[in-house]
Length: 148
Ligand code: THU
Image (cartoon, rainbow, N blue to C red; front, side, top):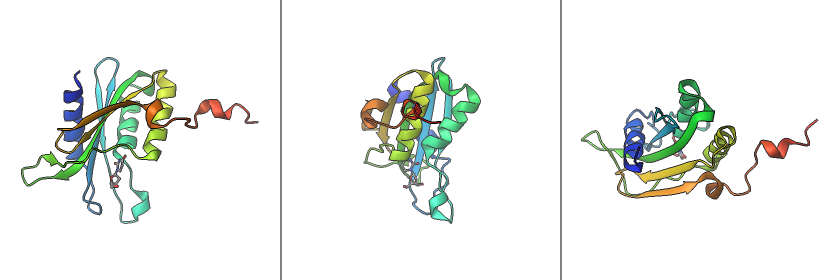
């Protein structure tokens, strides 16, 4: 699947966001090694700190659909939904630190340095980075070797 198509899935997922407080809709599409897609979008809450990011929602959906071990690539896009019902926006959405940590965990399970494709709302600007670049020196399962 091309980067453009995966980004399209992420932009489509953003249309299902529940983001009445930030009014910033984020979508995430997770692709499996077999080409399956799992999607998620951000879901906010009146108790602001309880909001869930699109990446976490999509990783949970991916776990249900095909398992973390089959994750191949991840695309994220965010912006606002225009009056035409299409996601728009100029700035590229790069995953927050917490989502990078969750992607690192999926990378560990899959055994792959997962590629994260980040796009602006309009899908016109796309950047691609492996999770090892987005979260260098991240805390992973290997850091727990000294637990009791
Ligand atoms: N958001 C995500 O869904 N993913 C990110 O990586 C960054 C931020 C959401 C959280 C909140 O609902 C909105 O974007 C504004 O921060």
